[in-house]
Length: 71
Image 1 (cartoon, rainbow, N blue to C red):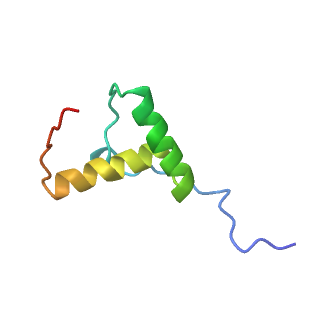
Image 2 (cartoon, rainbow, N blue to C red; image 1 turned 60 degrees about the vertical axis):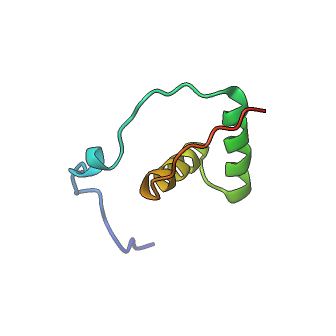
């Protein structure tokens, strides 16, 4: 069987823009919040961390302000 492409001789090159795209941080979240996003992520078929990033990115781009309502 002939391979269409032979990548064995190529050297991998790191994306020079990757560091500018995302930054790894540590954040403390409630267990129930993590469970909420994990369940939602299963429903839509994406990783939960990507889903959380999408929500936070949307908030930042739309300049949403937090409204607190105490129950």
